Length: 296
Length: 296
Image (cartoon, rainbow over all chains, first blue to last red; front, side, top):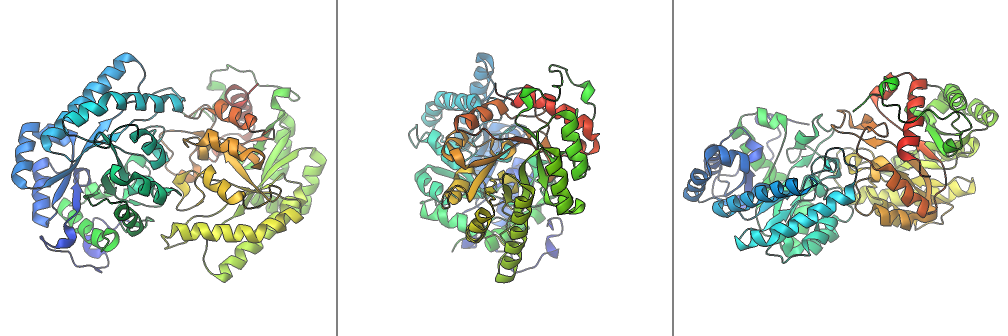
């Protein structure tokens, strides 16, 4: 189901929209989709193709240097739809807790400097050797409590990301939007919101009701497809929109009804996508976005 | 994390209980765990090791012949904790629907003939080319409605199995116990119950509340572990208890509180387990069951 490195081989049912096309007004390139591009290259790729927003990652920002990345972003005129990522809050003990809080405080400061709409929070999986899921979830709640005000004081909203249960053990113990809202709603909305990523929530029987409940808590939206057979490395198992099973338009319609009018980030962690020419990937994702995701 | 083909290499923290040990009173060998054994071999393996119950699969039963399988089971004195599996109800159209109903009626008759406690229902994933998950879920409900009375008239309870969302696209569109109970509760309990499989439900933030809600609807319990990294073939990604991240005792305690006192089937679909000597696998699973699953 992957035709990603041969974008010209796919059915050309949609012509690539040109820069300035209003259909691209809410599209954002999550930097991880074009993983081999630096911040500057990703920004230039967005500008060449008419994508008006970018989702940044901390590691390539650090590679570029924060101050320089801020200058590149500032000069580009691109919106920063999110910074990925904070989180990893589940390790037990005071020392691990302090390290996690410090690291997230740095992430919050970076998000503020970059003018990011939010900091996406991947909360972490079970600590090594632990099978105590309720305990890990309590630790997430406690540490979000420590970070929420710090973030809001710097103008950064934390965007808790529920993750597909496939990642419950090793990435994120927040597994559903319902559970994530139970936590987010303990805080003022300007402190803690949620990320809706189609890969993580598409299967949820309650997704329509929970997107409706989320309303103004939704501060980030990420899209990629669920493909089968699932690639062997589950961390790189995301598919290009249209290659898999997700009904994006239905989910986008739910988000619209809930009042979400923000950016829609394409975030695809996939070895085949990373192996392909980034400009070709961007061309494909723009067409696929228009064809499968965009709601009129 | 797999030490399955060298059971003697694992820490011998528990001596293998001998046949007749009361700690094995609720243990059941799901036949798929020792996939290369015929019905007769699996029955003999249970008798040798003191496992008092077996979960059968339709395919090996057909290989043996239903009548002969019934004689083997009858003579063994083993309980049949379940027959796996009915389901696959999501294909659209009247012809596909008729085929699915017929196949499930045969499965119900086989379960009745074998004296199985229930027929485990894996309801099926998205039809080929479809992204309409609500529609597939409606079709499951409609076809369960067609089958429920037919099953109960033959003394067979349908045991709807919520499946880990990893299988939503290609195996089972019932994704949570909550959703599965919403469907099961439309029918009398003697017609439709649920299967609780630790692999499928362990991550669910609502699992405690939903097991409590399920109560007498719980007619089958299956155990295996969630291991990381997940094996490349997701259909064979189940782990031996103790090799992964699941807190079995907590889940078994919840089941006990909900009134479930039935058999606990060990069902492990895993290429390494299948490659190992079946008697060694049975020895390992008995020890691991006592060490990780059994609640005093």
